[in-house]
Amino acid sequence: SLGLRFVNVGHSGFTLQDIYTHWEEDVLAVRPDVLSILAGINDAQAGYEKGMKREDVLQQYEAVYEKLLVQTIATLPNCQIVLMEPFFLSSLIADPLDEVPHPRYGAPIILYRRDSNQTKYLKQTVQGLSEIVRTAAKRHNCIFVSVKDALEEASKNSSEPYVVWDGIHPTIVGHEIIARQWLRVWREQDELV
Image (cartoon, rainbow, N blue to C red; front, side):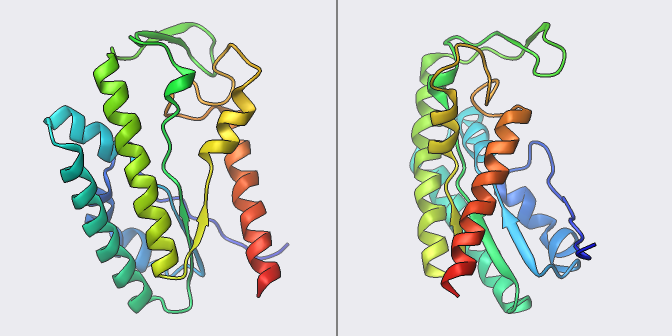
C-alpha cells in the first residue's frame, strides 16, 4: 500500500463562489498534500440562468479563483495545486437538447432544453473560464491540466455520447480520459523537478 488517501469534496451544482464558501471546512481543514480543482461549468450555467453578461461571470470567477488560491497557498504552502481546465463540449450535443441516453441505464432521460443561445453562451463563457484557470496556474506556479482536447479527440469517431453524455457530464470513459490526462501531466511535471 502506498498510504495514499483520496478525499473528494466536490458538490454537484456548486459554483466557484459556493466552493469558496465551504473551502475552509472542505479543503483547508483536510490539509492535503496535493489539491486538484475543477470548477467552471456551473458558473457559466448560473450566469446564463441569471441573465448575466459573460464578462461579469468571468470577472466574478477570476476574483473568487484568485482569492481561493491566495488563501490556499498561504495556508498550505507545501501543497501541490493542480488546476483543471473547465470544459463544455458543445459539438457533442444536439440543439435543442431534450433527451439523451442515460450513461448507466441506456434509456433516454429528459434533461432540459438548451437552445442555441444557451449553447453559445456556455461555450464562450467556458472558453473564457479556461483561460482564467490557465493564467492563474502560471501566476501561482500550479500545474495546469487541459482536458477538453483529449475528450474531443476521443469522441471523434463515435456518434453516441461515448465520452461526455450531455456536453458537460463525463461518462465512465470520459472520467477515465480525464484521469489519464491528469496523471500524464503530473508525471511530466514530476520529471521536470
